[in-house]
Image (tube, rainbow, N blue to C red):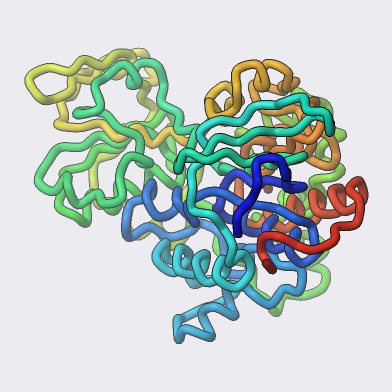
Amino acid sequence: MTHGIEDPVDVAIVGAGPYGLSLGAHLGAAGVPFRQFGLPMQLWREAMPAGMYLKSQGFASNLSDPAGRHTLRAFCASTGREYADYGLPVSLETFVAYGEWFRRAEVPNLEELMVLDVTRDLTPAGEQYVLSLSDGTVARARTVVVATGVQHFPYMPATLAELPARVCTHPSAHDNLGVFAGREVAVVGAGQSALESAALLHESGARVTVIARTSKLMWNGEPLPAQRSLLRKLREPEATLGSGWGTWFYSTQPHLYRHLPAARRIHTARTALGPAGAPWLRPRVEGKFRTLLGHTVRWAAAEDGAVRLGLRAADATTREITVDHVLSATGYRANLERLTFLDDGLRAKVRTLASTPDVGPDFQSTVPGLYFIGPAVAPTFGPVMRFVCGSDYAARTVTRALTTTMPKPRAAVGARG
């Protein structure tokens, strides 16, 4: 379909990961005219090493469609793959294939173009957003929803960020850790990404050392038995992010979470549920390679194709080690300033909370018509926004807001064509 420059669509979605695709499915079903831009499941396909598994349980790894038909369970059943609500890790390969299946069914008109720039323009018909696309064309929309996931937010501490990329990288720079076979690799971090990367490196033939500040590696508990008593269910309820009343609250009450004091929201969004490894990963880590726990990296220097790391232990003793490569598995930290496809002037008008967009109950920022969903707004809505399962609440809330504020469309453009 040809979209004229003078004919803005109601909504433009930037991003085609779990949050973007879920929103596309809901807007399409609601009859909201929209265009959606991005490469489907790009982060999961290009920025995660082969052989990885999701930390979430199967029942908590669904993208969201209004009818609930296109679940991970339904995909696995239709393709002959193993599936279990609990206890069977979901492979990266299965999840990427699931995302593609969901996209074909729910968002068939996704435009596989990158958004290079978003500006806000005043026209005789009112303010509109202008999106410059990677094929040289321009799209206009009355509303923009940013759903780009964490791909813009890989975090490395300053000590390691200063090293050249040939000797120090973030896990998101790799889709195959087998390239480090036979080499000495230091993995910095103690969360799921660090521990699983270390296991994959070891299993690929690398000589691995894990360096972490924590004095002890932490592991999430096994899933609770489905047939437990009512009393036990009341004492420790199960939710998408795990078990316990605190986790239940983070999983199911994002609308209430946003009313907590700002300092508590910010801290909890960053620290809840980790750093810790999934229980199924534990046998692949413990006793398999060297771990230097209770150590921090004080300095790092690249020399002669290798890296020297200066470490400091909790008892203030110091040591040096030399490795061929450092994998800084130090997670992601959302920061509005790293969304450089948003015009500088536009970003400057967005009020922030701990460097992330400070959004209202409908996910709308302080710039009218500019919405953010997903990990970028975890300090507002809580840790659930860092996980796939948060896409359901985000998609339903934004769709409800847009169908309430916009005039009834004449015809849908986008997911349903």
